[in-house]
Length: 476
Image (cartoon, rainbow, N blue to C red; front, side, top):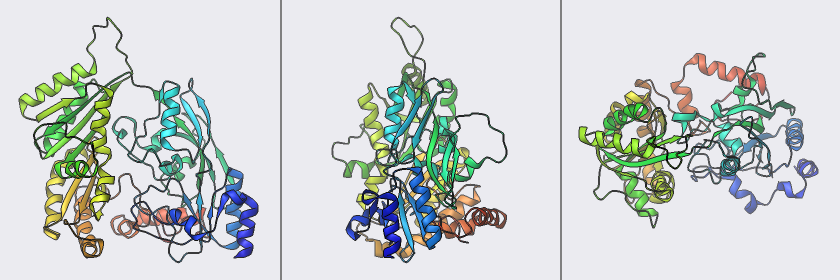
């Protein structure tokens, strides 16, 4: 492969090529340390033209391409296989914000821009880019779009798919499709954009995007509430839409087990409430209407206080604290956002990124917890997530003191019990994390033949050599 490596070096230069094993390692393993692959090289192009040239070379040499963003995924979608003839194509050098159009409420960026950078640039122009998730300080927009990321504000703004107007993509033929159109209406044939969003790099490589922006909220109210059970959480959310005048931005449900892990593994974290409770809801309302001096209109904090007071009288809410300033609101959010990292520090776990309709969450939660315990009575369930859009991270921690080897035999039966129940409730086995290589078999089991055949037909048509992230989502 000396000649192939030399040709790669000729395209991307020394700065854009990593061949030393130690230097390659961070790109070859996933964030959860579930996968460790091999790669002929890690290639870091600096332009779309370089990406296209690299793909063209790989076509000629029959080398597969594994696109990678910030490498923060949960499903192994950006990790190469152990024995594959592959390169990792990292987009982390393509990290320019090309344009912010504050008048048109759009931002054009390269795929390697960190999500937090996009949020900050939007804020500098008094605008909002609403995609928000725990990994926002290290994940990249290309990875977010390739997995159709969700996050904590889907309830109000939608998944990543709803936040994009146009894309630039390098196809499996090494050609460049320029679809960077900032148009809200474009009915000229098939919507090619939607083929690549959520495709996890199996149909092409997203290199640039035109993103939608929104007005920056001027009035935000955040509350940490204890509720009696998941049914109370869903009922609280239902009433909040009207009480907030349709300004509910986020509604996150958490069980006590997850809070205990966060408090244990994050020094400085504190419980907002005096008493311990089984279930919590983090509720946030936001509005673009600013409150000016002398303005007699009731702000969101006052409306939220009144609504939660009524909820406490009716028994929906057991206790509550409303953030008095931005620092306190951030502390509330830290308890939610540190769930995943805290579980990683606690020990082995199974991630079930599932969704059911909001009204079915209470029944699913009851039955799902029972299903886990029937398989492994000593397991420690950690359900949490976006109750506002029906997406629950229905995770299962190994019993205290167990290592991965001891826990491994229980993973498949626990997951099967959970996924069978999800499908019985009309839900999805993957809500926002994607399929990657972790859920390929599950997708093949739970999706219909028609759906799978259609996916494979699209894959074969666009990538006949199966060189774009092979073995991810579907096998052909």
